[in-house]
Structure formats: structure tokens, C-alpha cells
Amino acid sequence: MLAIVWHSRTGASEALARAAWDGARSAAPDCSASLRRAADADAAYLLSASGFLFACPENLGGLSGAMKELFDRCYYALLGKVEGWPYASIIAAGSDGSGAQAQLDRIATGWRLRRIAPPMIVNFAADTPERILAAKAPDAASLRRANDLGAAFAAGLAMGAL
Image (cartoon, rainbow, N blue to C red; front, side, top):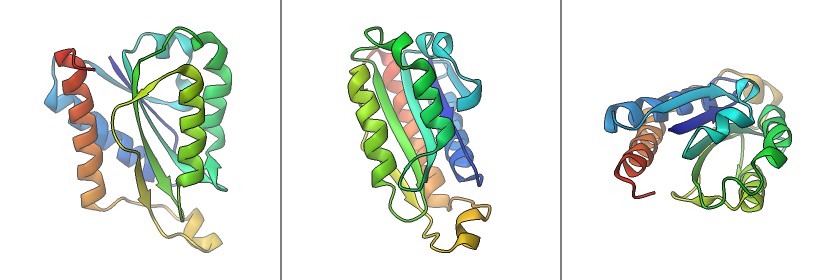
């Protein structure tokens, strides 16, 4: 199963996660894909997967609190149990995204996960409090990229290539 775990404050990360989920379900019906909010995911859920796609916003240059909290809750329960498992990520960034991506990659390195796709960072150029807090909708190209990522990930799992 491909576990797509997301957190969103303004709607962007959720929309990108849903696009990836749609791609996964359409490309690989033999590979189940599950979409779950970070707050609703736990170690048992993550251990039931065979790959992870994490989607979240950048907040203050790092992972969103809810996504970081997921890792805090599950880190030790998964340590030594998911080594070599594939993962990918989508970051909805206000201005950069590299800090959130680096933080996620450090956690993945601790779990010994294996990145299977380049990081996907969608920059919304939100540079004022109003723009940062505003609801966001990814453009069609970003949604297509997320859909393609989900499709390729699920297809790779279904074929046993990942």
C-alpha cells in the first residue's frame, strides 16, 4: 500500500496530496493507495504501507507542526522497521520550501528510507501575512505533477520495482 500522508493549512497541500492519490488509484489498481491526514496517521498505519508520500506546507522555513508531530509520535516505533522503504514528498512553499524539505529528508535518513523521486516543491510566492494565510489552489501543472508522482509511485510498487 502507498500511504499518502498530508497536512494542510490553506488547502494547497491537501489538493496536491489528493491529486497524487487520484494518480495512484488510476495508474495502479492492483496497488492500494491510502490518503490520510497526518493527525489521523499512526505507527500501525505507516507500518501497514510499503511506501510513503508525504505532503505538507512549509511553515516558518520548516515542516508544518502537524507533520512534524506525526514524525515525533511515530519515529521510534518505525525505527529499524522501514529501512529501505521508498518515499517521496510534496512541499507547498510560501517562498522557498528547502528548509521543510531538508527537515523531512533528515527524518527519512534516520529511518533509512529511500527517496524514489526528486522533491516536489510548489512555490506560492506568499510574502505577506495576508497571502500566507489565504486559501491556495495549486495550478493545473502542479496538480498534474502531483498526479504523475502518485501514478508512478503506485505503479512502481505494484510492479515490485520499488
